[in-house]
Length: 278
Ligand code: SF4
Image (tube, rainbow, N blue to C red; front, top):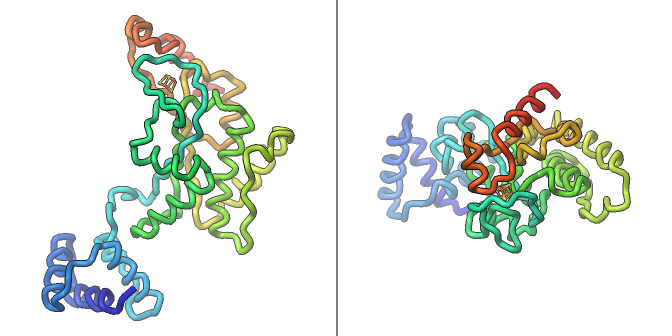
């Protein structure tokens, strides 16, 4: 980080902006005064973080908000982080759903989140840590995370894959707190192990996560109404699921049949009933 950016920031601070408009104006005035190009908010944020670290300035939540790229992303104080599961079979045959060979069903590799996941080989650990890193570099707090897992039908994935994906996601968060990070595991490491061992490992990570710097406070899983049965609900609970996305496409059986959705409105209602009462 150049001292010049820190000088620009100190100039901005000296103008005491109280609104985003005033901050933008102060930024323009500071760069004009110093005859330099307008730095990005991200560069200024890095300068701000350095200055706070050096105790040259006090931390200022309002200034941090002005420097954030998109403060709307965690306006509620909760960072939303999305990861994507690997390419896999989906029992659905919905006519509108895109299929791309290397992607999970219904996602195409040109979507930003999907492209990121593909680049990281759908590693739950890497997806979580990269996203936290990116959000924090842009000034967003990630101490409370609403975690959304996207791609295909969650319950159609092998049960060990489901548990492993969640385990590694929690571990990715926890390792940012741990003095000695725990090694990642590959999916195949669990192939010959009992489900109970995976469940125990997840429980341990979930407990650690309760006091970690990056806490997952909610887990959303995507699935189909006809995949909701008592057994799947039990697994989803143990995985830490707090919200299920069922994706009702229409409230008319004729339309559901036409789009080959593969379930009826009644099945959707039954799934909701089961989720509420299980
Ligand atoms: S259930 Fe979802 S992922 Fe599967 S085919 Fe239908 S829309 Fe696509």
